Image 1 (cartoon, one colour):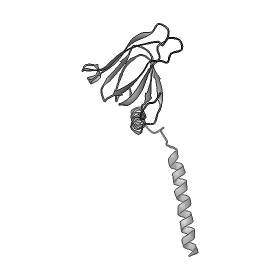
Image 2 (tube, rainbow, N blue to C red; image 1 turned 135 degrees about the vertical axis):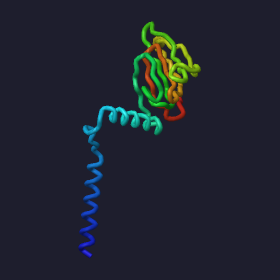
Image 3 (cartoon, rainbow, N blue to C red; image 1 turned 90 degrees about the vertical axis):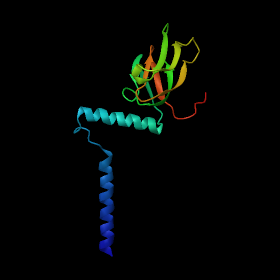
Image 4 (cartoon, rainbow, N blue to C red; image 1 turned 135 degrees about the horizontal axis):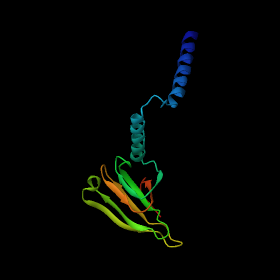
Length: 143
């Protein structure tokens, strides 16, 4: 009986040691392409799980599933001063149908920045003339 208890305790200790070692992932052995692929998968999983995070981005064009994970977001204009322009979403990497379009500008003093709920599909192009932030949409948005 004492041997069984010792065996169970030994197995428990080895299991806990294995779990502790599993928490630290060695990324040094991965290639650059594997690191980028892992990052893409982690970012997409965050979107899929609706783990709310915000990213600040410069104005420009971004492709869903490539530059930004496909998903639902809250777009917030970060225009300042006299900044203004369009925010647009096009299908097929910018070559397809226009799916969303709004004019954005800097808020007047005391006003909140312009905010829109958007959905960026795989291959859709999000184009913004002004800096902006994207927050992963985690459900109903109350203000």
